[in-house]
Image 1 (cartoon, rainbow, N blue to C red):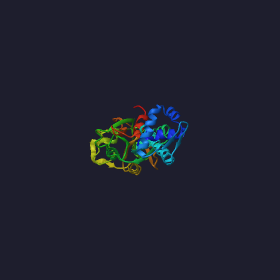
Image 2: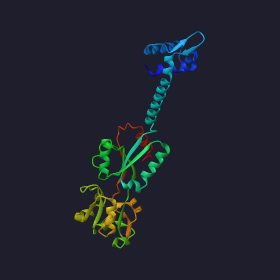
Image 3: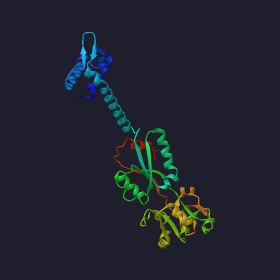
Image 4: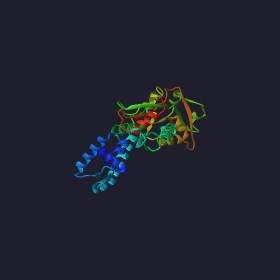
Length: 292
């Protein structure tokens, strides 16, 4: 028994006439009759009594009709659900992010635009360091990641979309001697203890932005694994911190920010994903990202 057998049966039951049912289904009457007969052979008895003037349901037909309607309705719902998924209209997009993606406004803007276009798609957010995002995208526990291109680990083979540059600033205590300057240069940092964020101790990406200043005394560089930890130490006067400029939205007592000049550009904010993505919702999210 196939779905088309049930569709033909329901059409005849509704119309009580093979000719009208055939026209409704856009098939020939002989085709319709053959399909109904095939269904009757499957059932093992007649579903209709036919006369020259009328078509009526048998007892078996009366019992089959409501079940046939439910089966067809369920099949239609399943097909609609699958089509909506392929078009990216349903499902969930699981996104990992670093704090800078929120502070820069990139992630909130992307989420807002996507929700306007796809209001039925769920969004699940998890804050993770960059390397953990890469691993989660690889193993399928995340669909996408928003992170700066530092401490990424091995991102080879992943889809990478560059969303925005991340300029760097210096965070320092308000009574620090560099706080009176309008801007701070990399050379000026060489004489001071430096605090940087890194996902792991061996990461050198941030320090590479300010060489050769950092190389003059590598022992004076402190690597901290959280943004708030970096800012807390800077606010306490334990050194000057090198941070994404968007971090200036975080205010702490006694902490000020100054632009950093004379260095390589800051890290780019990336969106990472799988190149062979099959989820319609995730593909729709990627299509909705602004062109770089």
